Image 1 (cartoon, rainbow, N blue to C red):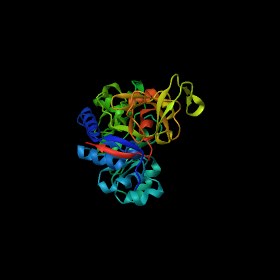
Image 2: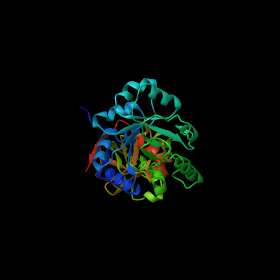
Image 3: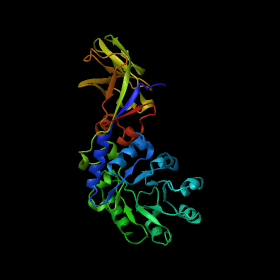
Length: 343
């Protein structure tokens, strides 16, 4: 058995607290959870298990492969990308509900005698879903719909499009067989109670992302940690890493840690990111490479080969520093990490 020189510190208490915060912000609406993309990079099974324990009852994935991974947990799962012909055996097995996105998918489901489903309505994002006019044309007749849903395009900013999408979706209230309606993602929850309908579908904010100022109490869930491969002294005037982007102004103690852009620690952190050893800040210097990063350890004389270093990864600040979105910082975390859940 091998162990990785990379690990993710995952705070189960923070994850559960974030869901409870979002549940409270959702008012009378139920609060679900998007666990697609392997639980936003943190492990879908581990995340869903902990959220179910906290009280979450509705889960959303992108594909049937993701649904199959969660099937042993016995959760209520919706597959957002609908059903291809290749998906029908799994879809008809009952492990999850398809979110039907087009007339062709509706006909495929109806012809197969499929049961309960969800339906996506496009209210302006022009990505997936039936138009409002299509939804009112009779195409949904006879379907047993649990959730009628749509998706906000610009919920993280205050623009007129949010209200336009809300109005378009509200037009469908009571005009289909749907048991529930759902519009708000993480940022949509922050737009206020009008957007909650019957069910909210947060993703980013569950995992420590802060899409709107109203969510400032969201807690950090994930902290990447890497082991030191080597500690070395770099003399004044010598450079570090590819393209010699950093030159030591004085003799510097440098640690090379076992992480890089192949692990989701992107090149945008070059010369900007920071490691931590307790309360000691360890600045990243030079260019982030595929598997290695250099940090300054002058203030950490006891730190050496094999020791672990945490990376600053509070998502809003890390996104601002690296130029990557909070979403990319989460889902980009590679499979090399060993997950370590705390609490």
